Amino acid sequence: MEKILFLTTANPSGSLTKQALEALNLSVSLNNALPESELVVGITGPDAAKSAESIGGCGASRFIAVEGEEFTQPRYSTDAAAFEALARAAEASIVIAPATSRFNRALSGVAARLDGRTDTHVTNVEVADEKVRIQRWLYRQRIAVTGTRNQRPWFLLIEPGVGSPFQSQPSNVEIEKIQVDLPDECLKTTVSGEEKKSAAQDTIRPDAALLLVAGAGWTRKQADGEFHAQEAERLIRGFLDATGASLGSSKSLVDLGGEGQPVLPFLTHMNQIGQTGSTPRHKKGLATCCHGEEPHTVGWRFIKERRAINSDTNCGWAHGKADVVYVADAFKVLNELNKRLAE
Image (cartoon, rainbow, N blue to C red):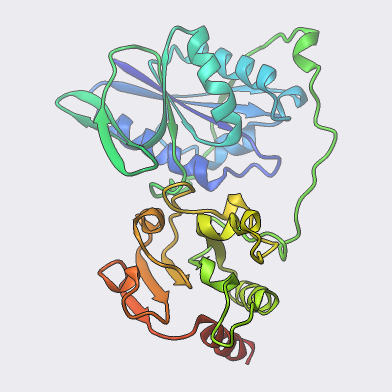
């Protein structure tokens, strides 16, 4: 019989993140698909009761928690100790967790301590031929593979955005508290504070409905033979502020500074999408001044609706890579869009 442990961290508000609820939904589906299995929920943090009660109706047979202020900070030593204690207490054969920075950093170490195995970038978990099988992407999400393991415990890190979040079903639950004794050396690392960008500065918005991609054409010479990088920045920022869209870029754009060309200062490699960047999962995507060839369009694999603005009728987007192509000057289009959005 498989014992499935769903791992998450408690927020001070008692709510769970969207990524955690997505991983929980997969855990519940796997538990329901197996003929004999048991689902256990494991929570770490200062107060796990609120988080447990928010998902009390998930069908778990047990709710176990490692509580304490020392487990609030994201720190490898304390996180690994807490996750290990929960996995041992649950006698888990399969451990499922969201692929957040905390779990990505600590869970592989826990698997090594328990002589288990870890799979990252997991996009689906299902039962086929009476075996638990996972799907994950390889080579920058260009190859999808399906596989299984006989080794237990098996740790699975679920990619964000690949499934639906569990619909919270609040219910009173009984929590078993697991005691973890930490040596002093585990508490050497502390978080002294946090620095956050303002909403206006933050251009990477994973939950936004629209992704705007700025291609290298924005910083090249325009029809008048001049560069208009400052105007490009004004138009793009204005569109982002008005729509709340997320911003992506092609590698050529973020690397132009090394080639002596003008750059958009608010774009970094974190905005980069495509073969050498990230693969976002927004409902809609609008590519502007992009060539639309394979290295870039691979980043649009999970975009539901694709549109592009390009003055070249022979651009890559016009060859079956976009649902709609607007043959126009992106500067003029965004300028008009910003005017209408301001009305």
